[in-house]
Length: 219
Length: 211
Image (cartoon, rainbow over all chains, first blue to last red; front, side):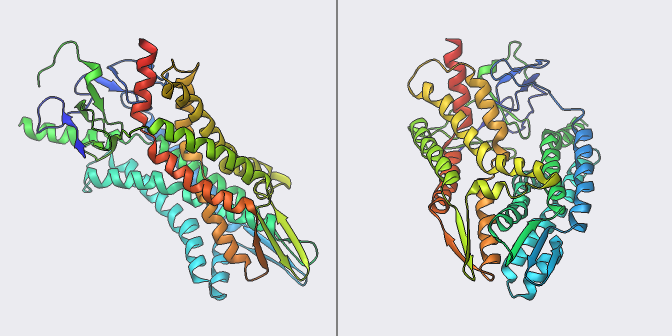
């Protein structure tokens, strides 16, 4: 493992902005501050994305709005010889629990309820924490951001389960499983929260600290 | 802090997660360079990584095509059977407004992984052969990186496991050849992703372009 040597003074990490340079967030090439387009990979370069938080909140709200009908409408429609049953996400998990499949019920509950709700809260917290002093250390917030970015995709699992179930269980009159309206809203909710997390500029977490430390060391 | 007036841009590396600037130290093969502030891995060079990644990518391409065409799963209950391919699973949402969902699912589990693999081959083959980069290689690699979070083959695999356990109460489930292909594929996608050192790829795309 090689730790990078700090540019400038060794003990005090300085940011690219303080050094008067800006890095391309896609290919990490360094350019003088004010460069608009990375000439290596062609991405647009922004030193700090000033509108980042607006986009985060906009996408966050859309995601949350989609999450409500995703839980109210049925996710799966199971038709057997005698009856038609419609299950919402939570209803389906409870049903599984009654059948004794507690492990599966837990996976579904974690992927479709705990992770999305946790993600909404985590993104909101991260977005608020860069605008005001926060008691949570930058390091923890960076980890939280990476966890949110990594784990968000896994919520899609419920959509895939519905897809497999409803294509596989098609036994004419005997039994048929069809997707419900909630699946569309749920997929949209996952996609919008993923976009919201991607819109977040994690460099902002560290700017606040640099500002605070800067004022304390100067005095 | 001393501001050297022309900043040696090529000697700097900046962590894209926390914007910390470091003077560049190329790690030895097999080592990793991390950002000392936030711990993000910046450079992970590997010996002969290019060739290995290309080999794995070709394997993934073949497996994706195979896994899409061959029967994936089949169930039977009370004398009735039904067998589906992955494409059928993706096309499950084909009635009414759920068509949009069909396209999304198909893209997430088949087309995005396939596109990423093909783009990777396109970018890496000239680099490994020491030729100038293919036309539009930078855009291709940028697109491949942008698609990364949207490639959900491994999530689909876990979804399969959950669905199978749910169904196994109702009916007997049989595995087709595509099922095993898909399992191998998921492992290979993860392997390919961990072999790839993005910094090195960008560096080689850059070097060959300017010289």
